[in-house]
Length: 91
Image (cartoon, rainbow, N blue to C red; front, side, top):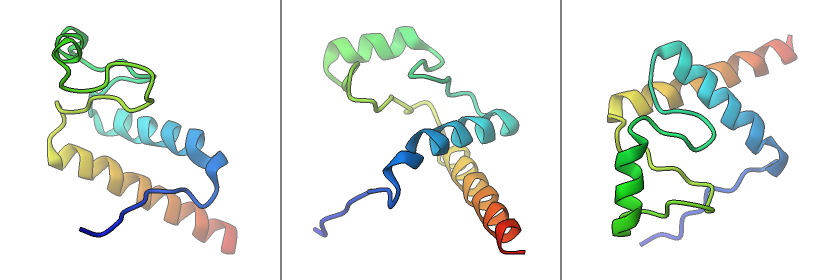
């Protein structure tokens, strides 16, 4: 299996990308909370008790309630917005 890394070229951009992701999700009506809170927090707390995922500290949040279509729409929206911003800076 290939060694995959998801490193940012500019590590300081992490917060800006996160806020952009939540902004796009809000515009599309995708419900997956912000700052680690997820819709149905009681379920995620229970799953954390069972060890299904890391409930705290790691920075990653459980997004198992999203469909592939919703996650792809958010990712596509982020990409589209970043391309638009890059094009505006080049003009």
